[in-house]
Length: 171
Image (tube, rainbow, N blue to C red; front, side):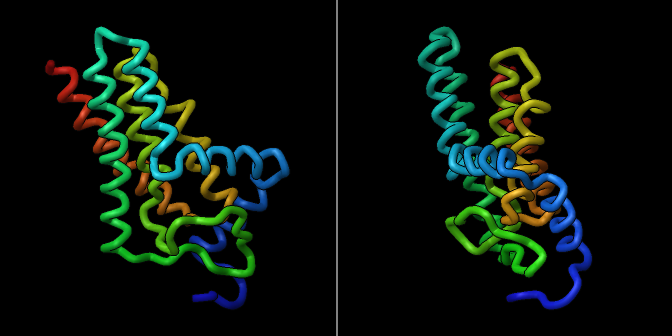
């Protein structure tokens, strides 16, 4: 449903963020992140690479990769319950196609955060600050999510990733 008039609330925040962050370079990067993160495929593939390279922890990498897909699936389940439509206001430019019209939570934010948490545990490096903010910002730059969508997605991914990471540490 198209919201009319001057943007307010989250639409205003999204329009402002898009206005500040959007440039040819950021849109190109955001589209690249969008394609990489679609259906968690890029993060799953990185987990498979980890499993191929780190033979001693192959099973842990595979569990983590499946965990990323599981986090993505959880976000899809929440989307279908909440049924929040994507932003639709003249002040917000949508710059990429999406597989659904549902917005909350951001599945890209969910799977990216789960991957960052899980792969941090396996690499011994904190990947969260390097991976999560760019993906969250990309969803705003592209105009396909409200700010609370990406924050909720990151929270969901953090919970799922944290629970699985805790189980991997016990092994």
